[in-house]
Every structure is written in C-alpha cells, then in structure tokens.
Image (cartoon, rainbow, N blue to C red; front, side, top):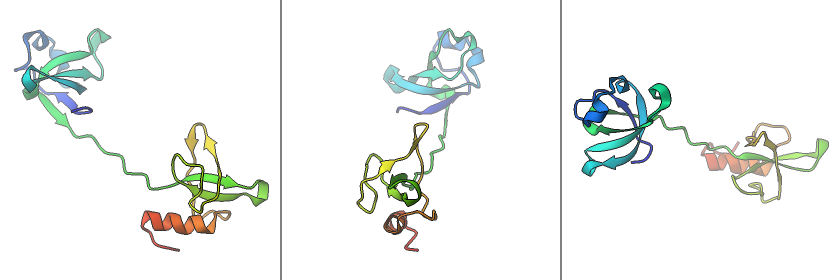
Length: 142
C-alpha cells in the first residue's frame, strides 16, 4: 500500500478527533499505514494548516484514491567517451557500467550529477553502439 495518493472528500466516517478539522477536506496526502483492521488509514498530508499535525487517521470511506501518473520508461543509454579532443568517440553505455555496448571501456560524462544521454545521430558516435542501441530499443538497424 505504499505511495497510494488520496484526496480527503469528507470526514463522515473518520474518528471524532479528525472530524473537527474540516479544513482537511479537499487536501491531498499519501497513505502511510492501514489501521483499525484496514477500515482506516494513517495519511501524511502534503500541506497542513499551521504545520502542526501532518499525519491524520482517516476512514477509507472518506477518501478518494488519486491515480498517480507513471513516468514513461527510459530506453536511452548514457553517454561514454573514448579518446580525447577531435579523436573522441561517443559510446552508448548501460546504466551502472563502465563499458560501451560495443565492449570498450569508456569514461562517463557526468554533468551536474546527471548522465548525459547517448545520441545515435552524433557524427562521432560509435557505429557498433549505434546499431546495438537501435536493436535494444526495438527501432531496427539504421
């Protein structure tokens, strides 16, 4: 049940201590844990008035589950370099490795903590990595 997003739509069935705080209606939060044999849940609210209490016991009947948009899966490979200067060759690298798809050891090119994405259309791109990255992504050979 982790990461279930909810919106408080009413407080009719929640405990009396929670029902007093009607300003919770319309607010969003995340379910932390089930309580009372699963009829109620502990909800961590995104924002609270005065930031005094962040977690509330709310009955499931008073909540609306909010669908979470899933991020599209990234198919791309990171960029790795062999050589220097004008002789540098760009390679497609799988995440958490130091080898290009072609098998050569490469240097990653981090940028502000991010790994740059391999571009198969770059002029200095390794031909073997271009072919293998296209095969891996299901686009076919160029």
